[in-house]
Image (cartoon, rainbow, N blue to C red; front, side, top):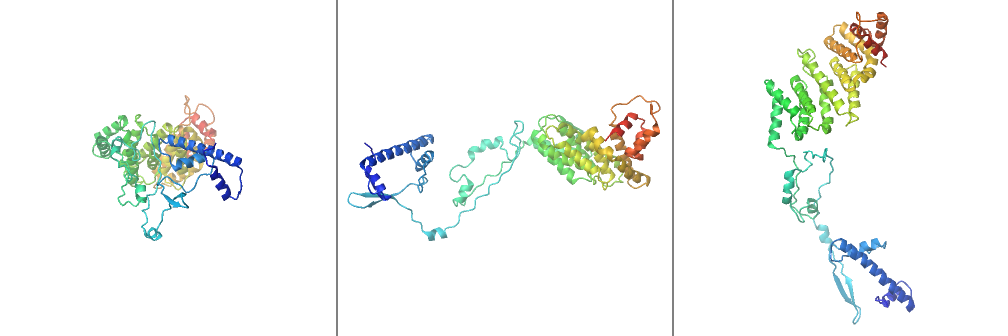
Length: 449
């Protein structure tokens, strides 16, 4: 016999238009309803126990219905207690119902609007690099971990929820700040001051030596990278500052204890500026012309060092360096001093193959530009001579090995070689190359694409 009252089944059947049901059908339906209810309650109790609770909520019933693929009940929630009212439909027949809350629309309309919550924002940063957490503002430090117990807890701990609820005393925790030890802060200040001290060579040498060998400077790497970019940007006319900044970058790259890979992208632009910028130094006629070209030579060596050391970790690094230098070299509107930096930069970043493919095919037309500046004794004649010397220097790298020669050339027709070379690279550059007396070099230039 079913525990469920068959009269309830009959009442439901009459409400949907079924007038008469036999006792056998009522009994079968009562047994089925009892089984379905026990199945729903069993699933609801499972959900309650998995939630580590001893009280059954209406939400558990809704989730049990979803598990059994049954349409859930609507209009019930467990965020507030239900209030039941009682009504009488006859003697001894009470009826219980859920009381609906009465809402005064006038008070609801005139109530102040809640405060707008703070907008959510997303940023990306390095959580860990090779197992080491970078000391950046987004990452917590040991001091912040110890202060976790001081963070407010409770209903007002979340500023967004507090703003929605209309709480005026909204407190927002500030961003985690990068905490450097006093020793590192003092070290950074002393290094920067010593590098820019023009009157004390001993301090500058000691500072650079410390940067090359000190293994405990991991936290200062982003600060030194930012310092390099800032000083190059604001001191393009000061050759001394630029030279010292390039020495600083060289010392950082030479320090095997520093992990500079994540910062190479930020370190390359200031070095390229010193290599390819037309605004370095006060003017082209300045007496410190040798320092001007020495700075470009130093920048080119740094570019070559970066291209060799970090090409594996960044596959796009080397092509970007070569493209920047080649684009500058092929621009005839750039001054010769910039072309000088582009030529030595191409050799440093790409090696022989880039010289063979990128420079040699363009030498005939470029030689005309140099010859015009040299023969007409233009103000840029000295710069053109420097570029010519740089071109001969990078072309010399195409020769694999020297051969013992007699009077410059061991065999062959010199005039024939000279004609082919002039046709390949132009008369001016061909004359300089022939003057070296190295037939293997001439052959390597002639075989270049």
